[in-house]
Amino acid sequence: MANRCLCCEQPLEEEGRYHPKCLKALWGKATAPKISFAAKDLPEKVTTSTDHMSISGVQAKALVRLNRDSGELEFAPTGSTHILKPEPNEYPDLPAMENACMVMAETIGMNVPPHGLFPLSDGRLCYIIKRFDRTEDGGKIQSETMYQLLGSTDKYEGSLESIGKAIRAHAENVGLDTVDFFERVLFCFLIGNGDMHLKNWAFLIRDKKASLAPAYDFVSSKVYLKKETDSALMISAKKNKLKRSDFERFAAYLKIDSKAAANSFEKMKNAREKFRELAIFSELNPSKRQDLEDVLAERFKRLFS
Ligand SMILES: Nc1ncnc2c1ncn2[C@@H]1O[C@H](COP(=O)(O)OP(=O)(O)OP(=O)(O)O)[C@@H](O)[C@H]1O
Ligand SMILES: [Mg+2]
Image 1 (cartoon, rainbow, N blue to C red):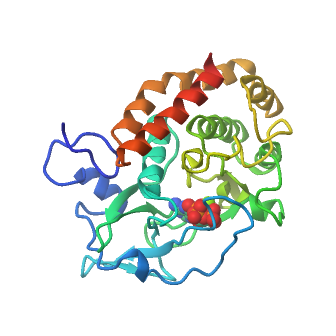
Image 2 (image 1 turned 180 degrees about the vertical axis):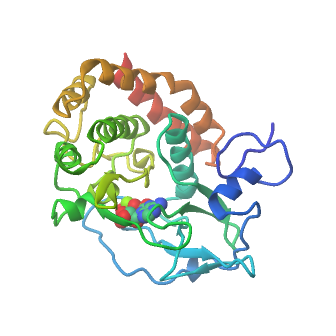
């Protein structure tokens, strides 16, 4: 069986662990950065929030950039171009989980920044994603999370309808972003991502025009937390026991016409086999691969049978 690329998770024809074009998209050149630090060397985390049993807030992350002269990856509190998320002790394989989920999103055409898995000096894989709020020449693009925009004080407090409303009120291209948002909501339900709180949705603002930021932080939290809710935020006034009719009502609330909503459901349904393949051939350990496939099976059944 061919090795798979640690970025796109598709088979590799060549030697090594990456497609050159995947490295190019992520680093601007076809070589992987040298990483001479381990998770324990990460700069100390500034915030902690343990009031919720959730994956976010537990995880350390680092702002990094590639030093073009030395080829080394370095910490960059300012001037970073990428975000690095190591494997938390509490959640084994989380980087591989995030990479697999982001690849799934890409296969259905979602806007996903370049990302991949890279070994730290201790051999453990971390997940790295290119920042979508930086230009190629290091400039800043304003981004605003829904937590900021809605003036929230609790990222788990609120509804997906309120995000839909914000998109309607502020997005430059309401129709496009609304369907995109709806499809991300369906997708997150299907992969068992119950952690899409207000800080995991954002706008990018360019020339005073807002658009939904690319996707980030897609993980199947359900694989790790058996009691995880179906949704981090309310949808049709609930977070659990979501059914197809809840999502249909949600689409109607978002003013997506029924034909377009049906297309979105169909798109998800058609991705079933691809998602299975990506779960099974992912970098997850075999038992987690199966756990992910089990979550997918249960969710697809709930939405499509
Ligand atoms: N590719 C990206 N480009 C720019 N900003 C990003 C990107 N990915 C994530 N972010 C920002 O960084 C924050 C943290 O990233 P992420 O959500 O992936 O990590 P997390 O550990 O789940 O953090 P949190 O506990 O804040 O949810 C996000 O809320 C978002 O504002
Ligand atoms: Mg997050």
